[in-house]
Image (tube, rainbow, N blue to C red; front, side, top):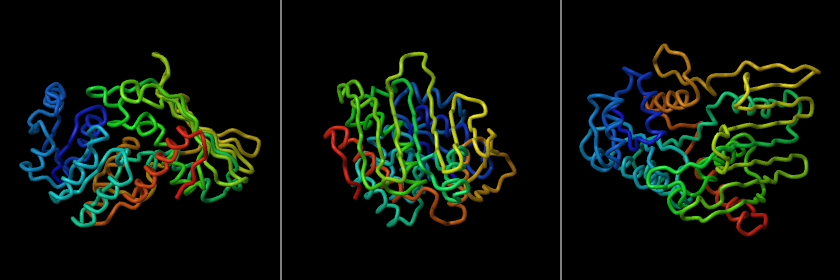
Length: 341
């Protein structure tokens, strides 16, 4: 598979490094970025790979099989649709798009082109979250009673400050907190409503809602909440965590601890052995897991090679995540609960 990479920011560069682990199944055939500085970095990282100053030019000339869309959020839908219409399978980084209508356009393009479209909701491939889902589904320790999640860190700015402009980046809720919103949908299904509270700065220059808390309404027998922020002071380490309380156990995850996962059950604390994959995602290579982002790539490439649509993250489920996040933003701004349709 010949891969074209659109965007050589932090996520694009990270994906490009992992492509090397899939050789010879895949070949990085082109990298496009509007920034001359980023193209120079790409040339240093990947000597000999052809560089382009726009994704459109690369799509028109590079004879690609697969395109990874890792550009700023406001360009996700446009570039994904163009790549699908060019006959390429598309992996698009999260968030899928800024509006559900854009998501639907992407889904329509994938259906019409009969190509695969997968969104990088990577927590669905993250071992600690896979283990949480397994406990919830199996009810090994009884029903889940409460789940509190957090994802906090310093501000992201991005190329030309796009993260700080709600019209281009959608605020930290789309960049950071969306992971936990997606995990809630994936693990627990759709809530009845959301009630969100947020602290806001200027939406065009300072990031808009940069700290928020959400309560997901699943009824009186299950309490679910999540915190997201991009306002931690310099030096504060990025932190992802959750605490899940079951009828007979508590599961606690903290990205800053080693081991990261602790299960409290039967009067003892233990550290569960974590799974590598949600399902069989053999990429045809005899290599070990290189983390959730590799697992995500391997799954996508395996789907493309087998001619099947990705099921772990369907475009429809990713669109539902955008709808949920939009409801959270509406609740923040109205200070009222918002029913999920």
